[in-house]
Image (cartoon, rainbow, N blue to C red; front, top):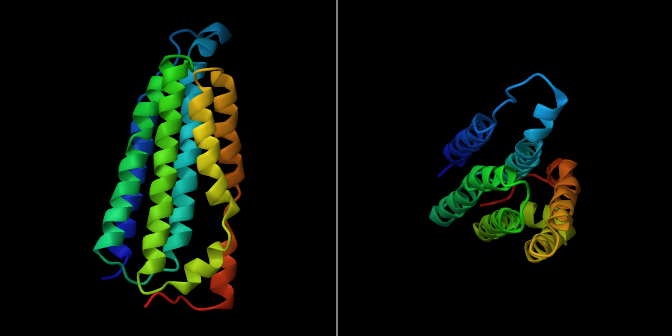
Length: 196
């Protein structure tokens, strides 16, 4: 079957995730800087989470440019990714409302780690399906995909020691991925999609 419905469904779920996150933001009740500073932790949590969801949407879009057909395992792999990403609003709100305390920061890192592992699994399922050489060649050694889970794991463990270090690690991973991944685009220019 074609990948169009999967992509449309994924786009819709990601849009809902972002909507849920922004609806959880509450503006300050007073028009002064002190009031704004009181809502800074939830706002900063939202900005980081929005960045992560946008990164996943961008990379998901690029990855599915290499796909012309999907099977049941890809559908379930994609649903697993969406499930992990759907936990981001909960983790974001918990972390922000508790002003970056250790356990909420660790849980946030766990959600990010699970999403990264689900994305990796989805990549492998796509590559396995019809031996997608375009995606496999585009990913290459994938140093970003290999280092990210280790940084998340370090952030989870360090959250109980110093949550600020964990936050720095989560931001660092986002910055690593913030620049759009051009590997797939470059590969698509040099060779046609091959996933059959």
